[in-house]
Image 1 (cartoon, rainbow, N blue to C red):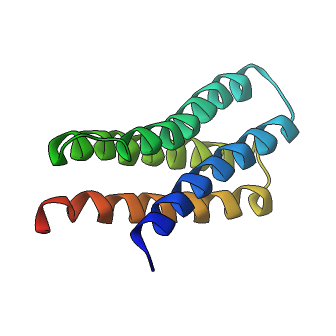
Image 2 (cartoon, rainbow, N blue to C red):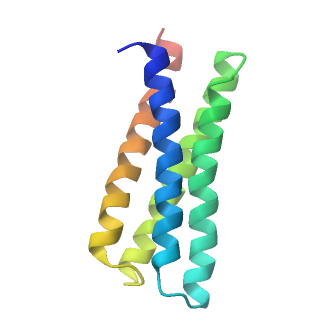
Length: 120
């Protein structure tokens, strides 16, 4: 697969994931705890997508590595907040499981991309 197509696909995938998380959050029954978790969840999800876009504009391998480190960290934080919603039963398992799966795939892809930066 062409690298440019792959990069654009990941930009779109992280954006769609952020949108899916926003819709997921909007469907949850709200209480103070869910609102606090939801703010963190949405911030980390949007940061994953935004920082990946920024990484794609990096001017050096070091800058790319730094931005990708933020992407991995934010994606992992997103995974954490989704798990909290699942384990506290604020979210139905069937609704959150799809997001958890997609989030873990994003974490793995971004971690692999970061690890391969200095191999080339």
